[in-house]
Length: 317
Ligand SMILES: Nc1ncnc2c1ncn2[C@@H]1O[C@H](COP(=O)(O)OP(=O)(O)OP(=O)(O)O)[C@@H](O)[C@H]1O
Image (cartoon, rainbow, N blue to C red; front, side, top):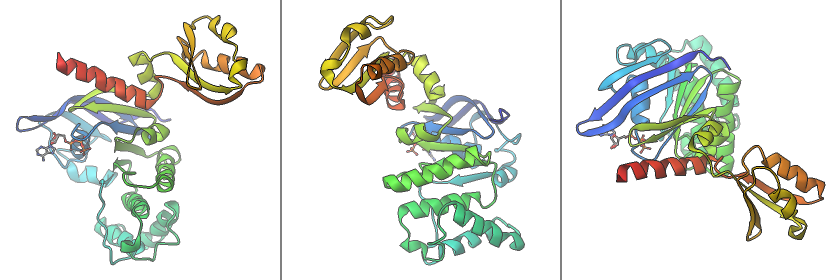
């Protein structure tokens, strides 16, 4: 990945009266990175995105997007960023293609480029079959895919997606996530996704930032966050036949504190990420069938839960 910084946020604060929506945010995002802004409702994600686009003025602090200051140069910033809000408005009585032409004209994309670009994007988001149907007949998944095409029309360097998969069925979600992933990996676009759907974010983001009450309480890759918080260091395994499980051999492994069985799950306390492959190897060598392996604390759900517990505990003091 190109490690050139494209978004730089320093000491950013946004206050609405007595509410501090964004509280001293510092964050750098690299070109081509897919970054997940995570947090519950009201954590300050949307306010941050609006300030990055120059649609809302910071109370204090500084922002640079591709070298531009969104508060002072909002028109230039709007040329290089694309924004897909959580509910996108399309004209229902126009077709998907017509809606894209409408946006292309609004964005002053030269007429001679419009057809090629729109055809390309329609096929990119998998709407070839549906492009000439009225948008009011579209499913939510199709509308979201049209939304991605709409955002990409002006070929933005940075794409902001607010809760892009909200309300989609699993198939629609998987398709949309694949499209988003390609934006970063194949096209070098920088993508910021605001979401509270952790598994989806985990599947496609290079790094995530966890927001709680306007504060960025942690940021990094999933494994960095797991390390920072000092995971539970337990490995859980489902393997059969359970009676063949080599308790003594596994208990004797350096680092293992204890081995126990909870329902049909074997829990190996003390064993972290490093020991998991060795344990699996030992079981396979003994002819066991493995159905499930998880290093507890390494999952974004665990990390998220623990950050919230920590922040809750601080606020209770
Ligand atoms: N225009 C506004 N006027 C007053 N308060 C606002 C305004 N916009 C946001 N807020 C407040 O700022 C805080 C952060 O809101 P924001 O919408 O940025 O959070 P969010 O993390 O995006 O949440 P959501 O997931 O619900 O969109 C909330 O307390 C919200 O009520």
